[in-house]
Image (cartoon, rainbow, N blue to C red):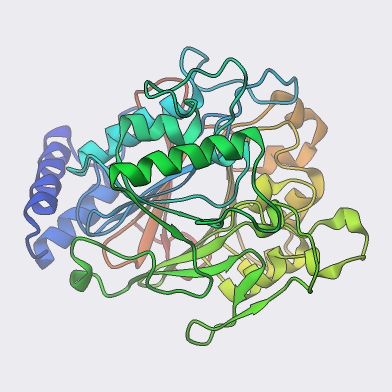
Length: 431
């Protein structure tokens, strides 16, 4: 791995901000500089800043819910989920870095730091995979209210108090009634917030299965023609792979669970491919009944092989089945964990299996309950058990690294750097 002195990295960070702010063309020398910046992350030092042409995917580890920040090659900013479980359940992972702030506040502060390095101060697109507390936030009787008195501060809403959001995409807008009215306290809190955001001028849309242009670069799309996001699935409607056509997995009259309605997407940058599917699952507890409840297999099969995959449903017992793992066959899995059963034994066995697909692979968790290390022996074979997991894709998408950051404080110190890996290949390549 190449190393660079601090002065060089600071120069590159400043150059990236200047280019992003000025929307200047990115010449070959700048692309080379951005690639050098991607390899400049050094152990025990803060993560180097994003520069134009890079794709950074930050899996934020608070131990209390999913949260992913994406800084695209042209500086477009996206987020997938911002969860916050605020209860005191013995099965939950302790709050990270500590309990002096709510999980959503920690996420918002992380997002603000890393967007500022890219010269950005807002989130262009926020994507909510589904309406569960560990993906959007939890309202309890003692959750503090916003100053306007209309909703409680938790998860996504805490993030939006720190970093403004321009557009929201979810599975339910505008009616929020599939497969039944979404009206538990957490969902009603989210809906009240969305109503207030619309009044403020933010856009809200329903995530459209099959769409290839709903999530797109907003600043310099012509400069990065190899970047695209495909909406794979939502509400049981899955892309067929042809145009924007879809098919419905749910039979008439079916009543799916909230997890089965999760959305899934694939992000491409050149040869690099990334999969994220919220809590889609195969629902093994039905023991062969209602086979339509297996939504993760169709999602994975239409996604196809990827380089990095977020583990469905935190790699819990009803997810990451053999067919899903075989279809995705990533070089790296990322588990966004919050519970003592993340990952569960069988999903981890599947992700490690050389029978499902051959070759090396890495498995990262953003946090780990210590009891799971004892109960699930193969956890010791995972690459990393704790920390923010940052996927850094070089300009053009041909290579990427995976950087693990310290989540015990806000220093963003580098704990480990893995790669570089050639996109579409299984082994690391020379740096």
